[in-house]
Length: 523
Image 1 (cartoon, rainbow, N blue to C red):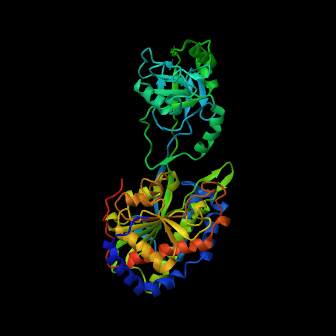
Image 2: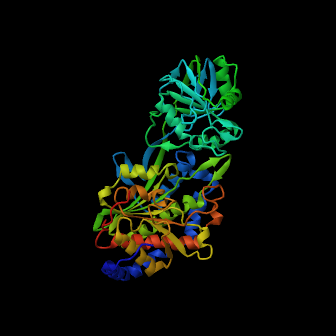
Image 3: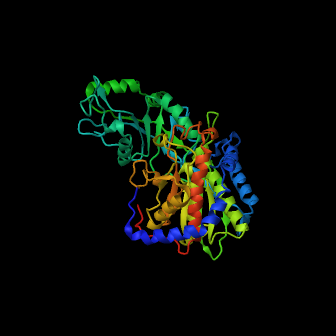
């Protein structure tokens, strides 16, 4: 927990007075945040009907429609733009690799997932070569090298995974332990690129096992806000069967097993040029996937040009092997919290107690793919970032982690003092005046090994020098598993955490002065 400096005593005093002045009104509206309403919304959003809400998939769009319908039912008007009235901020995302990639060697076509794997790269450019340069293990080291002879620039290299062994000892280390050439495959890739390779084929011993793992990657590929350009050297992981068909096409009478034995016996690297035409076609026919952030805007009164953002991501992991990853805690809990908070603030506004500052209730997609939705919003803000005073981000607030199994009255608070000392003081005062939760600062450090500060949507606001608070319950055994279900949510505790966000938002939205950024931005 960060130290509270005595020089902030006046801030404490002024905040306490403000809280007392608003206590009756704020507390009255906080009562409209109920565990029953939270459960009602979460039971719908985290149901199988929403198919895990994967970004760009039908379930995510169904969730977007549900959230926008709720905003509309509360009386929150759509935002007007040049295309009309909307609750949606639409954006495109692109798969970070092509599932249509083929490799053709001397007229024989090999298929992705069946014969080879590829974890990166998409391109409309076809890579071709008349020569495949086989380079043993693809290692250049003081004790062993496969590059004793110069490599041919701008050709396709083929290498084996691992490193040469003789009588259980590595020829690199002279020990039973392997070297960095095995432990860090990037070394071989980096070296091949330095040698001028146009593309790299790596022969896998464990191809069938790795293929099963790859199927999850292929079913849920990484996404990008920009159409990927294949500027990096393409890398493909191929089966022994594919490798031996290539060797056979190059009229080699030896296979991968023979080459390993030759290297082990001689202690020397291996080099074999094969006059075999190869064509690598990414077949990039995949168009952009369409996604959307959902925005509920409650306009303020005398300070309406200033904006408070209350955010959560509503996407999750989708469906794998027929199992729906419903993400009740991650982040159905945050999504339903934002819905409930939007309803409460809009009710207050209708009854003459609307916030002085405007509030944007922002639910974003693409968080699980790399904070894409919030990145798109901060790159294309609907309201000026210069007028955005704070982001309160809610990501997983419905569960209890192992650390707090015996004392569940807590919430992790991350980032509250990283840009604004006043925000941390305000947060603690709101908790003291209204909620009495234990604010746990365990992860409130940009250098924490878990790096939670960088792993949710608040970070895209913090990067823009906007103060943030990230509310979090910690991870648990069901994190990113199909078992993250509604029946494991502690709704009474969730209600209490959401009320803390409400009182904090109420205070920020209504105080006289906007939050001051007085702490250097963390990199």
